[in-house]
Length: 189
Image (cartoon, rainbow, N blue to C red; front, side, top):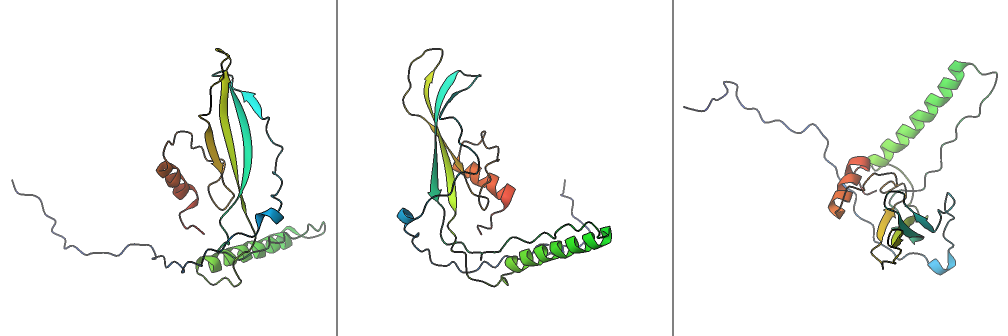
């Protein structure tokens, strides 16, 4: 039996996306002297240093560490957009027009960044990574202390992996990278 062939001629098509033309990498410079820089405060109060789980009755010790992130950043510092103040006598059409201008400005800024047209020097602002380490110290059922074997969770700033990623099922670094590419893209900006 002969294979079926199409009666329509084959016409190769180009992909429907635009090619990415990455900018040349800037040289990596040394961090500023971290002895003179105070790490920022945590945005929420720290968790208890010792806690236990109700499912396994294990006791854990938690330590939080702040580590300087990659330096410098590629993107320039962009100040937050000013949300127009509420004016009680303004009509809904006026408020919508102000918000439309703000949204248009934000979209234009994002587009300029994506196309490499955004002016300004790269940001010199130092960003920080937050790393939590959970170490199992004992179990309630046996009462004995178990050494080490902690799990380190890497909670990155908003420009990297988001801390809300549900990655407890991922056991390899490759899986974690894949999660980041799906959730936030792989542009490494």
